[in-house]
Amino acid sequence: MHDTIVIQKNILGLELPTDPRWVDLAGISLEAILTDHAYCEQKAATSCISLIQRYPDKEKLVSELAPIVTEEWGHFRMVLAELQKRGWKLGKQRKDQYVNKLLDFQQKGGDADMRFLDQLLTMALIEARSCERFKRLSEGLKDEYLCNFYRRFMESEAGHYHLFIELAETYIEKEKVRARWRDWLKYEAGVMVDLEVRGDRIH
Image (cartoon, rainbow, N blue to C red; front, side, top):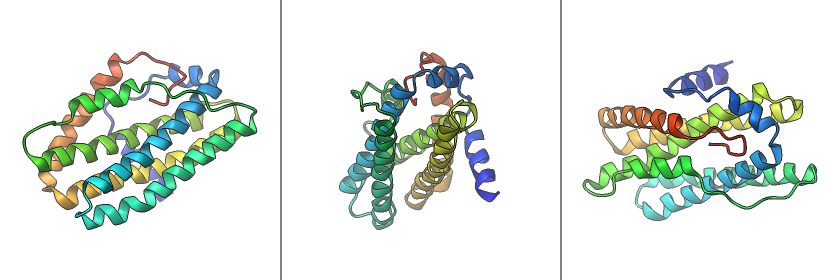
């Protein structure tokens, strides 16, 4: 019950819910959605590795993200196994317009702490949106097995979202984190409005 409350609270932090049409489109593009999901998990693992490499002096970040690398790679393997079980192949990686739009909003110059903060908040936002999308899949797909499959991923992503916010508040003043997070949520809502609704993408 506690996990469900936390997940609902995290999802409600997003200013714009997913277009209801997305789940129906995803349901008729399961091979494509699983392929895209696999690459999302792979990129999540490599992003955590990149943060560890970039900030080895931040002990809490290193210790907290190291197991996330293992977990995300495990998720990649789980999705790959699901593709193979269904007789499908891992397709080619596609350009992630959603993530690229988020990267455009990151601070590129100026204060090093704020650049670091934006990197963590980008990760938090991707995890929050993934959690929301997985919730939609867990409730809207006609395939009962995949509904349960995506509920497990939803719970995991909610925990990851919280971790990135927590790490940000470890190294940056809480007021600055919260203020910048509000900026990110507003910007992300605009990104969601502009993106085409496609069922072959997690984002």
